Picture 1 (cartoon, rainbow, N blue to C red):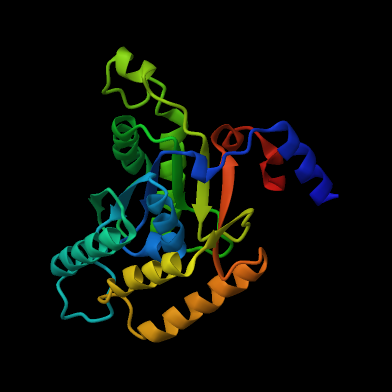
Picture 2: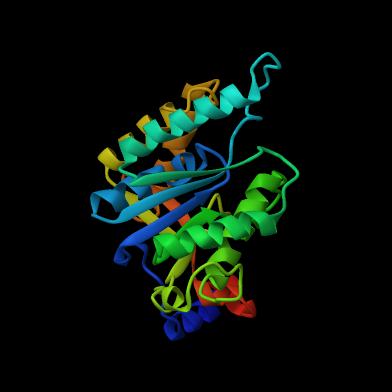
Length: 257
């Protein structure tokens, strides 16, 4: 029954295609999240001539078990690691909002920053973490995903965190879709060539400050990508959950997409 409902709804909706877009924003909680989850997809997008911008919400300063490591120094290290990884993947720009890692900050504050950046970049697609992942207890991930979608939904409304002229708002393009990564409800599988997957692995290796036991993580990532690829007859693949933006408001049928 669920499959039949899904096919019916999809036949009535214009489901967005990420590779038909030209200007994509990726909003991640910390340096390394997007590279681990969708680094191969990002490389495939940029190789296709699509502009990709990274926005990193948190500074990453909590990402250590060593009390001797200074938080500020670590956040600076992680920023440099992300810039190196982004260069490998062909990312056009990295924007760092600098919210404290695991800090007591509000979603509305993040949303206010994001909405003005999205108005400036004017993307046609947005990728972010799934804030509704089953058993996700990292509040940075939850705040990031919810804030990013809210900013995307309301950025064309002049009275929502105003800051642009009315003319600026009229020139904003539609965001065709939202793609969630680190999602348990994948509905879109992106096939990857070996060069895309290898670039992802090289990008992840840039995050050396975070990845003790790096080889074990890389082995898992390889296994996961190959299993996902087998579903569509590809060597490697990554999964995301894609929705039309407007389906994320007052549309309970979204769970069937």
